[in-house]
Amino acid sequence: MRFLSNPCKLHPTNKMVLCCKKCQKAICAICTTKEHEGHGFLDIEEVCTEKFRARFEDIRNIRDNVLPQSRVNLAESQRITKKTKDNIGDMKRIMMEKATRLKELVDTILTESLQELQTYEVPAVSGAENQEEKMVGYVSRMENVLEQYKTSISSENSEKFLSDMKKTPTVILDPIPALATANLSPFTFSEGELRKADIRKQFGSLQKSTEREKS
Ligand SMILES: [Zn+2]
Ligand SMILES: [Zn+2]
Image 1 (cartoon, rainbow, N blue to C red):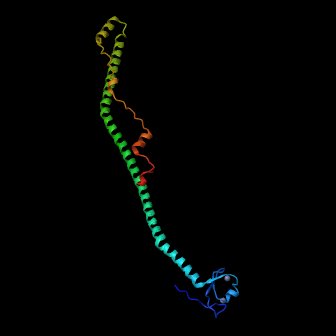
Image 2 (image 1 turned 135 degrees about the vertical axis):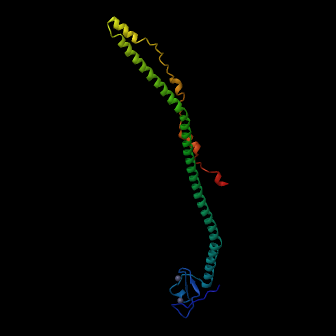
């Protein structure tokens, strides 16, 4: 690399072949005894060549080392960003699926339980209603008998009393129907304990992945 020297602006007959150490600018030989006296001087060609080499080295380093490695790291960091977002997105999706599945299972259990209960509900209710009907009939019959008996003893005339008694013969009383309360609804609902920790176990939970990331 060769550098050309321009004429000095202050002393146009001289070319600027020197570099002032203090001012770091091109000067001519006359300048060294005037404006730049005592500043210290170097050969301008050597200074320029040295600065050129240093700058050229910087350019080569950035172009050949710094930028290529930076671009590799940029690509890697972009990959990491995408992977991070994908991982979190996957976790959200799985959580939603688990929650949906849990709700579905609860609905299924409720439906099955109601269906099972219904198979007992019809016979249990109709059995209880039959028994109630039987008791209504029995009470009603006993009330009639009571009224007839009371009427039959209302006369103080012996002839009339005997005739009334004849009209209302003694009824053989049926025994009071026994109640079958215990057998009509032989089922109870045994409640389960709903604990958040148990549901959480079924659902899953977040874990810190310290080891997994290194593989
Ligand atoms: Zn000069
Ligand atoms: Zn100077």
